[in-house]
Image (cartoon, rainbow, N blue to C red; front, side):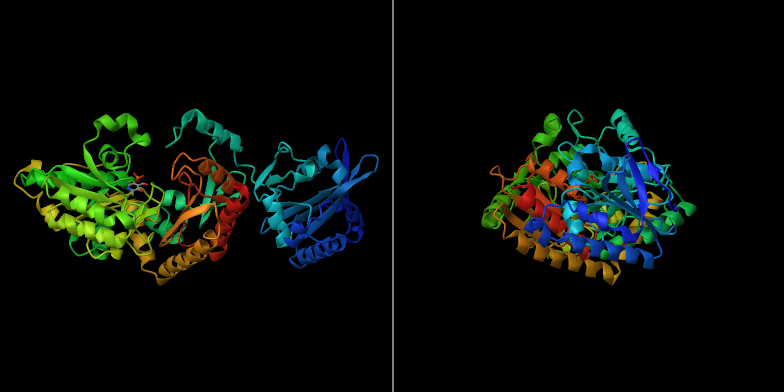
Length: 609
Ligand SMILES: Cc1ncc(COP(=O)(O)O)c(C=O)c1O
């Protein structure tokens, strides 16, 4: 760029050297409050200059080019300073740093200066960070700037307009180099035109966040902003996004068989998966039925139970489930789930189900007595539970002891037990399955979500030989006449096998243990806050309720307020009503976990109260 000047209608950017830093003296515009100082904003102008010099030195060592300009009016009046650190071409990174005289904050000069820099054509450089008001190597300062929303990282070549109520100095900019990325509005608008999203009232829904890339624990939106995937993408992801071992499994399998019918045909990966999954389940769970999601895995379990008794000419047709449970959105699964708001229109089509209260310690005995009296009727075919953790009800947790007693009671009365491990399976509760915490095991287990590391749609319903045998007959009508087009999709099966490979690695379990430990520390911090109650923890999941005076309700405002707050802070975390919970992919680092917990604590301390 040499000594080129950049000129617009109102301003001129004049290149200066490192030795011309005196103008910054006039630019020290931050309020010198104690709070900011303690958080690391340079204390005074000298410190700011030292930081800036160090930064420039550092950049030189790293062999990157930087350019500093004064921002001046065309008459030559000093307005501010803008610096561009052009990253090495290999890294394609760079930074823009600017400071505008406080009295001119509202005039839009910063925006204009940034535009001039961009328009000059730095698109070869990924300008990934805008810092306004302080040097970038001061991490404390950066934290403060993040807090007030002055920093965005990104790859979007676009300057956002000033936000309402913000002055020019508080604006932020996101710059992009990749010309081929379609403007965000394009996808979001087309989404609005054509897409019907799950669990969404489109009448009042905000624009959907467009995620264009996922890597490790991070998700990136169209502007390049990074979000930590704190809820593992609807509780499915186990080892992080884009895991190379999973990617390899997909491409290798695709080159062999992409998909085939699974009636009358089998294939190696389905068989490998069936064998490997039964090896890690209790010995009696030996027969694997494939489907393609959690709801279908549960639906098939229900059908297995009903037909088991039908095939044996036994008149048992009642089901027992737990208040607050969620087993999916197909009709059988809905019938067994919590009745109410979510499925009201369909309720008249559901079959009758008896529910037990959620087992908190004080009512466990009463519940078991009630269960016993129900089972004594001899009418019950099955009981279904989300073992140890009820996900959708707000990560509610109960004891393995209760579950053991419930299972034992069912078996005593010949009632088949279904564990819906769709959410709890694959390490989420600290062991491979929730049932591994229990003495007594189910007759059927439903698996999905983490089964494929959260990458492919696959469901498994694994049943005991006893159940399977009841379907063997000369009579074809006694078979389980159920199936889906994508049953045992070979690519999904290959991914599930690759997922199991990763669970065989010690490092996966070390990570899971580590998350459990970090959650314990987090729970201690949470317990000091008055606005928090019912902190609970199981394996990699930690959840708590924000006191609202309304109890645990899905429709609490906390959900939206917290969701927006966390998004702003670069964390994708979807609370369930007033329940905030964290269940990240297991590859998360301590640093990223701390970022999540810090933002949660900040929300509770500042955002919420
Ligand atoms: C315990 C449980 N069962 C079943 C389901 C349904 O799974 P899917 O969304 O894959 O149909 C879910 C989904 O959250 C779940 O948490």
